[in-house]
Length: 183
Ligand SMILES: [Zn+2]
Ligand SMILES: [Zn+2]
Image 1: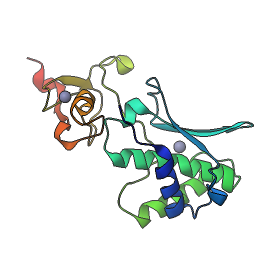
Image 2 (image 1 turned 135 degrees about the vertical axis):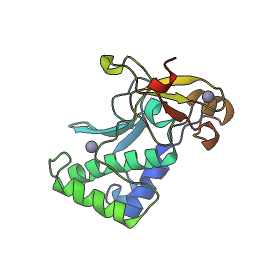
Image 3 (image 1 turned 60 degrees about the horizontal axis):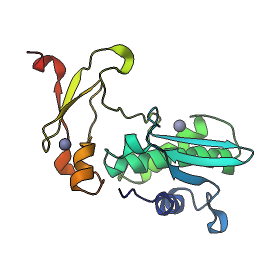
C-alpha cells in the first residue's frame, strides 16, 4: 500500500516555516519515518538522544485522516525538533513552541498545528467505557464504535480497497450517537 514519503513534505515545511534551519546545507537534522501498526497512542512523536534524533508518525492513526492531519502532525513534531536542535532549548509545549505554532497557523490556512494531536482508533474497549458514537461508512456500510467524534475520518478498509490507501472523501464516516441505535 502506498504511503506518502515524508522527506519531501519535511523539506517543504522546513523551507516555508523554519527558514531552512532544520536542514542546513540540505542535510536534515532529523530522520523521519512512519511507525509500524502498533503506534496508536499519539499521531506523532519527536525524540532525540546522543545517537538519535527522529520524528515518527503513526500509520494507523494518520492514514484514515485527511492530509491536513499529516501536515499538522508533522509540523508539530518539526517545531519540537526546531526548539531542541536549532534553539537548543529544553521545553515541551513551552513559550517558544507556542509562539512558533501561532506564527505558522497565522501564516497559512492549509492546516492548523495544535498542541494535542491524538486521533482515536475505533474500539469500544478504550477506557473500559461505552462508546458514545457509531461511525458508519457509506461505502461498505460497516459501523464502528468510537469514544469521540472526529472530523474528516474516513473508512480505512475502503480507502485501502478503493483508493490505494489514500484518504478519500467518498469514504467519510458518518457519526451518529450510539444511544440512538440502542434498539
Ligand atoms: Zn508535542
Ligand atoms: Zn468502508
